[in-house]
Image (cartoon, rainbow, N blue to C red; front, side):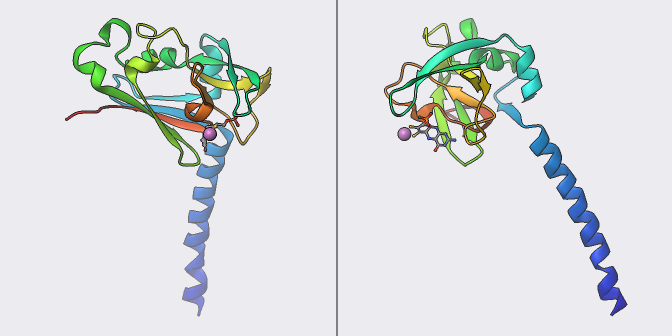
Length: 168
Ligand SMILES: Nc1nc2c(c(=O)[nH]1)N[C@H]1C(S)=C(S)[C@@H](COP(=O)(O)O)O[C@H]1N2
Ligand SMILES: [Mo]
């Protein structure tokens, strides 16, 4: 009888441990950058606030314009040592960026689609809209992809950027 009662103690200790990890993550959301990078990154909202900030506009699914503020996606990829600009040639043109979100939504871009040496459109990883933090169902981080006919690749609740080769 008493051994049954004592066996609960480690269970409760473990629960407390995992709960504290969960709370830390809730308090400090991050974006991970991994895969074909020279430096894996874990960026917090604070890290993003210290980077070069830009503003852009994008239409929502109803066609209304909204302003977004954040950091250029290319800036983040550059920080991780992803092949951008002059390095984005040859076999590197077969690399893609997979963007993962908290709800399981995933979108894909080829690196050339997001690079300023190929396109003038600037994709932003935004953390605020209309001067306010993103609402919790869209934040804390959202990709803002201008120049598309619908905002389907402007994925919200972004958690991860993964760069890979599309070929063996
Ligand atoms: N994480 C995540 N992002 C997402 C989606 C989603 O289901 N999950 N839907 C996409 C689609 S299909 C659209 S049309 C837009 C809608 O964005 P809006 O509410 O700002 O118009 O979000 C995009 N981003
Ligand atoms: Mo959509």
